[in-house]
Image (cartoon, rainbow over all chains, first blue to last red; front, side, top):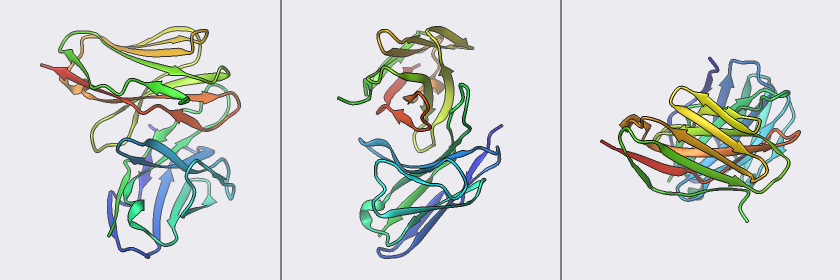
Amino acid sequence: DVKVTQSSRYLVKRTGEKVFLECVQDMDHENMFWYRQDPGLGLRLIYFSYDVKMKEKGDIPEGYSVSREKKERFSLILESASTNQTSMYLCASSTSGGTSYEQYFGPGTRLTVT
Amino acid sequence: QKEVEQNSGPLSVPEGAIASLNCTYSDRVSQSFFWYRQYSGKSPELIMSIYSNGDKEDGRFTAQLNKASQYVSLLIRDSQPSDSATYLCAVIGQGAQKLVFGQGTRLTINP
């Protein structure tokens, strides 16, 4: 079974704090993704990475950065948290090639910025 | 035009009936198609993948793909209350790693 874990299920931070969200997968997947999900807006891609130290912007990268130093770990960083970053954050991973690209999600982190 | 479109629902189906969920997509070169189930407050769970035209069955679930009409659907037979969830359609293009998700259809199975 694919397992994607995220560091926290719930997180409360103050405006202006630097926030780190961690994601780890145990299936040796090349690709990793960070999404946020908000009511009425669906899943929106923030960043993704297709290899160690590689990253690409998704649809809404502003206010976020990422780090991928090891294949199994992909971190999302909120440099200076703001209230409009209150959301559910979802990490996913997938392998490449053939008919794969199935993405498997972690349990999510519900972040509240006050 | 949205790239992946789903009826947001809610779709209400009596227990034991067939639930039919539909999805259309705009990119003709899309190659792979996925259905995810998401319970309230939880993360999406992959339930079906389909890559070629026709039907693919897995237990009570059947995915149907028609690339000419750019249409993919999910049928749930013998619907159970535990099937009540939001169902997300996702599509990936050729050579791409990113999925494009629809907004999801909220399904309620009434006992």
